[in-house]
Length: 112
Length: 425
Image (cartoon, rainbow over all chains, first blue to last red; front, top):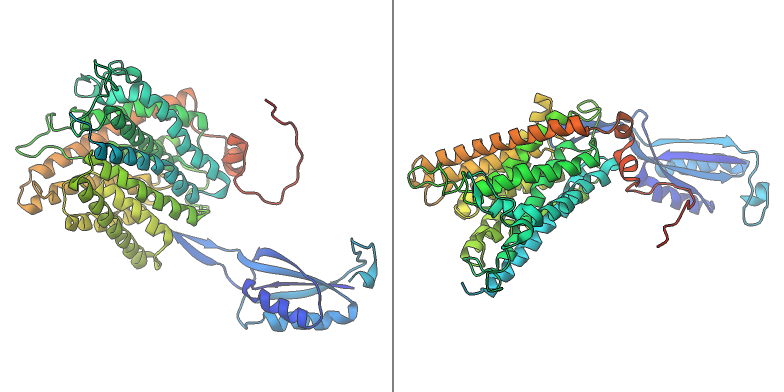
């Protein structure tokens, strides 16, 4: 099993969610995140005082999938999240030892 | 004098509108500070309502409008606790020259004292002991506000009965350019200097944490200001209507003035700029609302907006932490509004052929008001610094004053906890 994690532009979330649903992925966890990469922050001005805001708002999505599905899920996320501009984010996978479904107590692939 | 129910209804309404300004100010200021200190910021306004509300009925009214002592203040014991201020000898309600019961005037004037001292709190956001602030409120209204109200409106030194009358030009302060805005603005400057800067001032970003609160607060201030200026006609007549229209005209123009300066200087017309322009315009028209034309009000407003938009940058150049720009807005726009009467008053203004006298009178009362407010505030501030101390610890300031001082936090994050004890009656 793999955990696919993506940090994407917030406004791409709905498209990513639809694309994952179309690909048969039935659940995901979404959280608000802040960060920066090659995309610089921005400046804001309050009563003439100018501030740089270095951390940019992002959305983090997490999806648990079987080993075989992981590469295609990454591609689905990448394709749906892509705008081609700096700041589109990253998607990565890490191996997962075990998964348990809280409701039933099932383990492993059955819990996905 | 017969009771005028229309005038009385309007004055009760005006008093209520002006009282609403202070909670409005709490929102205006609260949104501008960081989220970790919003409750403290708002509590400084609500604390001002509580302390001043109590003091006003005890000796505030008497010190403002009681028997004159040297043209400086009213005798606090003359009408202490409002004795003699409500009923005549026959037990009937005292009625003023406009047919309004005197007790209604007491309520109206109390709300002015409350908002004036609350205005000062913006200069010392995020960093002062709540107890020191509450004591300051009591001392400042007693030694700065009530005497100033007496001098200007209670027949004292800065009124038409005082020495600063030149020819046909008597001092004009319709609703509080000197008493409210110069008074609070000068106090704010002195207090910011005595209290010192916030940790990180000028090096760390201190972004307003909720601009929607700021805009709501500005809207409530504008709404309340119709009582402030409209009620300063003391009756429901054309004069009140003129003040209403002048107030709106100046405020609208001030928003445009502020936004133009911002757009040219910073590149964006901001919501904080619009909210700030509203207040700058309201401040500037306050002393002038009864003596200028709507056209003159537009000029007063647009200049006030532009001037304050520029003046809020002074604190960075000069290095004082007037956190929420009480000086840049209330002192600067208050000064401009007070002096503008000398130019634009339709009966005595320079631009209306009235000569230089009114301008000179207005400049004199503005300077006297600044000096009086600055000296009194400085003495009170250094006494409090020695006796109680102004600043919370650096640790408290950095972590946020709400939790340490009030035992609360404004916004709920991810939390877990349990009940330690319940209060049982």
